[in-house]
Length: 69
Image: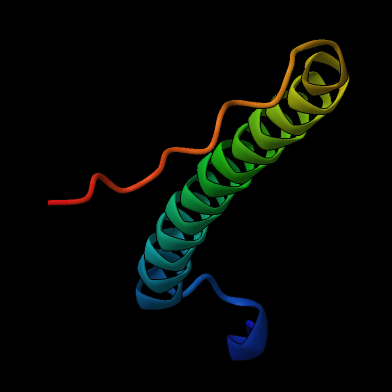
């Protein structure tokens, strides 16, 4: 007599295959979003560093005064 608990279940196999597909898609979306955020953070950090070091060398811009009418 065969053990029914060890027999393959096609419905379970289909369900797990679909779940694995969804999990892979979500993992891909999360990886892309993390890469975008890391690139944005690096861009902002580079911009801040460059503006700090070049801001010391350049004179401050003149203050614009309102024209009187």
